[in-house]
Image (cartoon, rainbow, N blue to C red; front, side):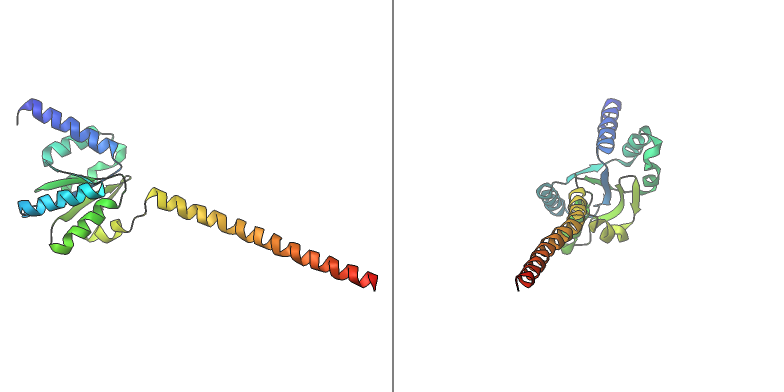
Length: 176
């Protein structure tokens, strides 16, 4: 790789890291070409981008980004073969890895970066899979906000019929 190609690769990785709030570092070594192609196909179907990266270039790209993003915790994970996976939804790469691993042991999760939080190790896969998307959280908040309104409206509606019934009963008493 020439010096210019390295600079270009670092810039590309820098853009990838800065434009994605969620990304995963995985170890897909010892996978056959057929397995890698199957994993790539699954990633494509689920909207997950996947590429094999050089650790030194990834580290240099991360070092050029602002320190307050907290990428330093990922540096120890940049050893051995590394595959970068990223998507618009935080949990989608974890779901892809989990689905693919039903047929084998790889890829192994090295680390995940989720909105400045770092998850280290393959044992975090279950927790990452359970993360909810922004749309799911907004939906839950809306349901919670609608619930009290429905109760108030229901009480007013039932109260209205109760008041009407009371008025009719009082009216019939006066007539008698």
